[in-house]
Image 1 (cartoon, helix red, strand yellow):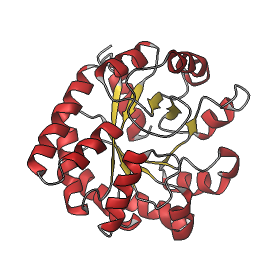
Image 2: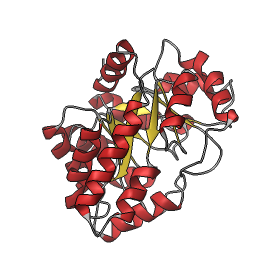
Image 3: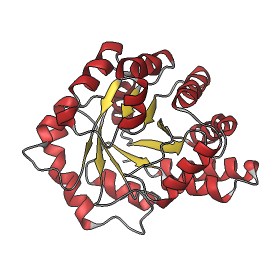
Length: 269
């Protein structure tokens, strides 16, 4: 059982959902990512998702696109983000997932990337622009080193295709809550609740279901968990706090911790 699976099992036994916090590695500078991780973990995130910056992040909205640009301008590389993961893991026992696009992985080479991920204690990898039908080589490389492969399902994913995505995934299934890119939303749409309920029969008893894109408030967390999801992924609200407080790091860390704590409190079912 992977460390990600262990965390979901533990939270389920405690009747809690998982809070997965996303930030971009190296935003605004690589040397601040550790303190940002410290703040989120102190606030209560159960898993940490660290983005590897890429110049063409097609799944991300303006907030995370800007974070990617800041990180790239600060000379953040895929290798540097993986090394940051190792530093985080040496300090904190929680699972850390790397999220990137296929281009940087392909450039490094799949085997080399996953060997580096394993060496730096990455627990899972998310690559949103790689269809499961074209992922055989990646699945082999990830499985060879024991790193979880986290695939995405979306509102456009058919019931005929869902079993293939669930079967290929490990750790958790990442459910995109709505059409479009990442970014905060004012409320959880009825379509998101319907989507969770449509996907649950495919994941129940097989793999945890975590919902991302647009989740930014405690009431969002409660609504999605009440619909049956096992966890939520929160990104843009944290990235916004980093952007807004770049000039005052101590205020940034305090705001991240407080926001994570408020969101975590909403995961108690």
